Structures are given as structure tokens and as C-alpha cells.
Image (cartoon, rainbow, N blue to C red; front, side, top):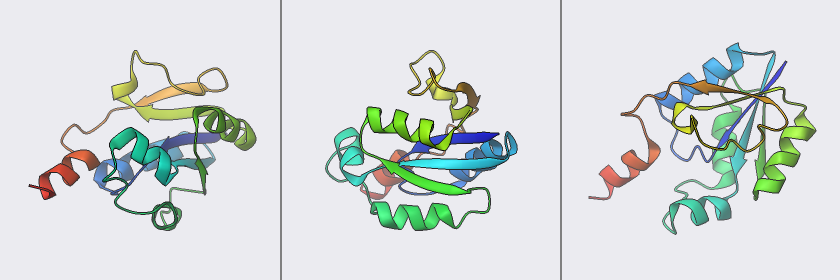
Length: 129
């Protein structure tokens, strides 16, 4: 089974590693979708991302739990990537419980229990004080 997860993954922390490990344990392959730099800026503000798409791809591709990394710039492109990769399970953080998960019409959704104190945004904000 092919498992999908996505995000900007701008500053990798232990919570991301736990997510990737969990997602990979749920199937035979893990594909990680990355928001393009422009999409990250739109969603998180002009000071983000900290790391470029190429840098984020390099880091995530090096993780043993990750089999493939792709990028997307819109919701429609995200849905198309999930279809192209033939993912049958999407793993998202538990903060999405009760919210729309893009791609849920294509694949089953599974929630990963987020580690609340681990957040890239929190790390960035703490270091900008």
C-alpha cells in the first residue's frame, strides 16, 4: 500500500520524524508531498519558508522512512499528485480531525497524534524574539 503525507516541512523536528515513521509503518511506500515556496509564503507569510523547496526536498529525501518526495503548488495539483502516486492512505496530523482533508475523496484518511509542543511555527517564532 502507498501512503501519502504532505506539508511544508520547513524546519524538520522530532514530531515530523515521528509522523514519517508512523506513516511509513502503515504501508509499503511513503510519498511526501511538499508545498512549493510560493504556497508556503501564501499560507504562512512572507518570512516563510526558511528553507527553499530544493533544500526541503533534499532533507526529506534523505530520511529512511521516505520513499519519494514530490511538490505541489495548489489544491488541485495536490489532488493530482495523490492520484498519480496511487496512494490509498493519507496520514495527517490530529489537528485535522473534524476538518476537510484534501484528497479524502481519493484515499482513506488516518490521523497521527501530533506532539503539541513540537511546531515549526513555534520554533521560528521563538527564534525571532
